[in-house]
Image 1 (cartoon, rainbow, N blue to C red):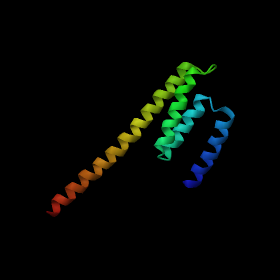
Image 2 (cartoon, rainbow, N blue to C red):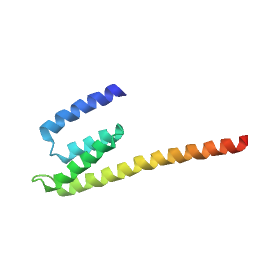
Image 3 (tube, rainbow, N blue to C red):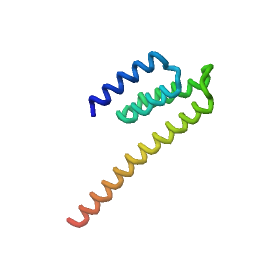
Image 4 (tube, rainbow, N blue to C red):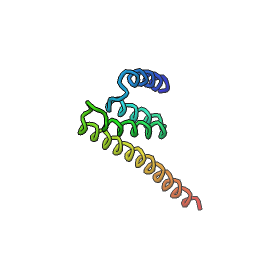
Length: 100
Protein backbone atom coordinates (compact mmCIF):
# COMPACT_ATOMS: atom_id res chain seq x y z
CA UNK A 1 0.00 0.00 0.00
CA UNK A 2 2.83 2.39 0.85
CA UNK A 3 4.41 1.85 -2.56
CA UNK A 4 1.14 2.80 -4.28
CA UNK A 5 0.88 5.97 -2.19
CA UNK A 6 4.48 6.86 -3.06
CA UNK A 7 3.75 6.46 -6.78
CA UNK A 8 0.57 8.51 -6.42
CA UNK A 9 2.45 11.25 -4.54
CA UNK A 10 5.08 11.45 -7.29
CA UNK A 11 2.45 11.56 -10.05
CA UNK A 12 0.48 14.21 -8.17
CA UNK A 13 3.59 16.31 -7.59
CA UNK A 14 4.27 16.27 -11.33
CA UNK A 15 0.65 17.16 -12.12
CA UNK A 16 0.69 20.05 -9.64
CA UNK A 17 3.87 21.43 -11.23
CA UNK A 18 2.37 21.23 -14.71
CA UNK A 19 -1.20 22.28 -13.98
CA UNK A 20 -1.62 23.26 -10.32
CA UNK A 21 -4.45 25.66 -11.13
CA UNK A 22 -6.58 22.87 -12.56
CA UNK A 23 -9.50 22.10 -10.23
CA UNK A 24 -9.39 18.40 -11.14
CA UNK A 25 -5.73 18.25 -10.13
CA UNK A 26 -6.61 19.87 -6.80
CA UNK A 27 -9.45 17.40 -6.30
CA UNK A 28 -7.06 14.50 -6.86
CA UNK A 29 -4.73 16.12 -4.30
CA UNK A 30 -7.65 16.18 -1.86
CA UNK A 31 -8.57 12.53 -2.52
CA UNK A 32 -4.97 11.38 -2.08
CA UNK A 33 -4.62 13.34 1.17
CA UNK A 34 -7.84 11.79 2.48
CA UNK A 35 -6.63 8.30 1.50
CA UNK A 36 -3.45 8.96 3.47
CA UNK A 37 -5.38 10.41 6.46
CA UNK A 38 -3.57 13.72 6.06
CA UNK A 39 -6.21 16.25 7.07
CA UNK A 40 -3.85 19.21 6.76
CA UNK A 41 -3.06 18.44 3.11
CA UNK A 42 -6.73 17.72 2.44
CA UNK A 43 -7.71 21.15 3.78
CA UNK A 44 -4.95 22.78 1.76
CA UNK A 45 -6.23 21.04 -1.38
CA UNK A 46 -9.79 22.24 -0.73
CA UNK A 47 -8.51 25.79 -0.21
CA UNK A 48 -6.59 25.54 -3.50
CA UNK A 49 -9.67 24.08 -5.16
CA UNK A 50 -11.73 27.04 -3.91
CA UNK A 51 -9.17 29.48 -5.27
CA UNK A 52 -9.68 27.92 -8.71
CA UNK A 53 -13.06 29.69 -8.77
CA UNK A 54 -11.30 33.02 -9.27
CA UNK A 55 -8.95 31.78 -12.00
CA UNK A 56 -9.71 32.59 -15.61
CA UNK A 57 -10.41 29.60 -17.78
CA UNK A 58 -11.76 27.29 -15.09
CA UNK A 59 -15.34 26.12 -15.37
CA UNK A 60 -17.10 27.59 -12.34
CA UNK A 61 -19.86 24.95 -12.23
CA UNK A 62 -17.37 22.07 -12.46
CA UNK A 63 -15.24 23.61 -9.72
CA UNK A 64 -18.24 24.12 -7.45
CA UNK A 65 -19.26 20.51 -8.08
CA UNK A 66 -15.78 19.29 -7.12
CA UNK A 67 -15.89 21.36 -3.92
CA UNK A 68 -19.25 19.79 -3.03
CA UNK A 69 -17.92 16.34 -3.84
CA UNK A 70 -14.88 16.95 -1.62
CA UNK A 71 -17.14 18.06 1.23
CA UNK A 72 -19.34 14.98 0.80
CA UNK A 73 -16.28 12.70 0.70
CA UNK A 74 -14.83 14.25 3.86
CA UNK A 75 -18.17 13.86 5.63
CA UNK A 76 -18.47 10.21 4.59
CA UNK A 77 -14.92 9.43 5.73
CA UNK A 78 -15.57 11.01 9.12
CA UNK A 79 -18.97 9.32 9.39
CA UNK A 80 -17.42 5.93 8.62
CA UNK A 81 -14.70 6.57 11.18
CA UNK A 82 -17.23 7.38 13.90
CA UNK A 83 -19.56 4.54 12.98
CA UNK A 84 -16.68 2.06 13.25
CA UNK A 85 -15.66 3.61 16.56
CA UNK A 86 -19.21 3.57 17.91
CA UNK A 87 -19.76 0.03 16.66
CA UNK A 88 -16.56 -1.11 18.36
CA UNK A 89 -17.54 0.69 21.56
CA UNK A 90 -21.01 -0.88 21.57
CA UNK A 91 -19.64 -4.38 20.89
CA UNK A 92 -16.93 -3.91 23.51
CA UNK A 93 -19.44 -2.63 26.08
CA UNK A 94 -21.80 -5.53 25.36
CA UNK A 95 -18.92 -8.03 25.77
CA UNK A 96 -17.97 -6.46 29.09
CA UNK A 97 -21.53 -6.52 30.38
CA UNK A 98 -21.72 -10.27 29.75
CA UNK A 99 -18.57 -10.75 31.81
CA UNK A 100 -19.94 -8.79 34.76
